Length: 137
Image (cartoon, rainbow, N blue to C red; front, side, top):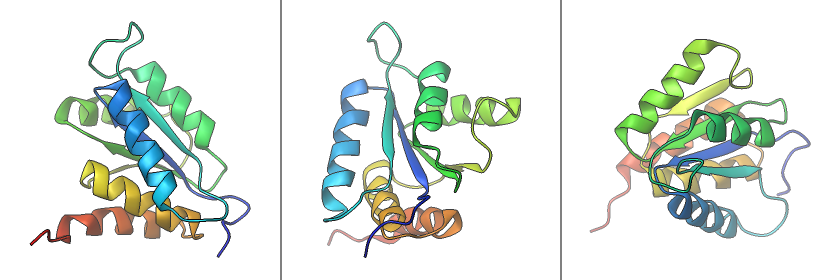
């Protein structure tokens, strides 16, 4: 199945630029053939350190926004606070941006796969959240 004309965008926020980029590559690679939903990493600080950056998150969200919503997945607690602060501002992130409560790696893969298959924002969020139920034994 090919992606829709306006797929949901995915932003992956990590305290590490390398982690965010690696998870984005992994998720896009596992999404299969055909068009992949737009996914952008937003990791680390402007000076290359560990942390989160409001500016990087806003830029990544703008980059992936196609008008069908943006799902934002985060790695750790302070990233949650940064995204919540951006959402509270009201004009820092695209309309219909959602902070997704999901495991970072598994949720990112589920979100990118479902968005690439044409799922709407609610289905992408649900798919990522379902990753909490994945068992490894």
